[in-house]
Length: 106
Image (cartoon, rainbow, N blue to C red; front, side, top):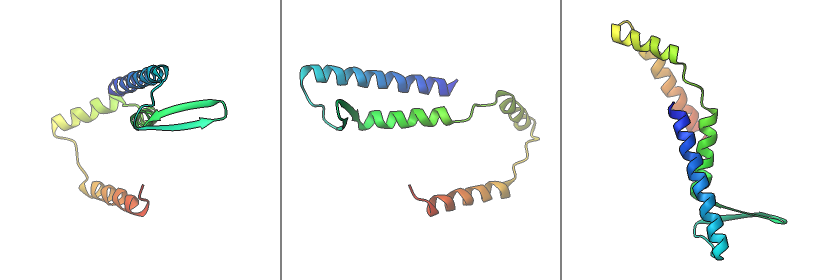
């Protein structure tokens, strides 16, 4: 499934990032583009990319599972020409989402 592939890729990149951080620390260099977050007795280096990958992985984990039966049912309705698109509901949802984005900018 696509979500599993994305999660796996994110994990591989995270592992690569950790490996590079460890190698850089061993060489005594400070990597560029790093945020240094430290607690007493602890040191953690996070690059912007690794932070973004972590956020992406969390979003993927929170994403709903694809219901194969529902997808197959909809696919058949579309193929047979029986799928009815309710354009008013679609337009309402688009407006609702856009107004929510305007009211609560990130």
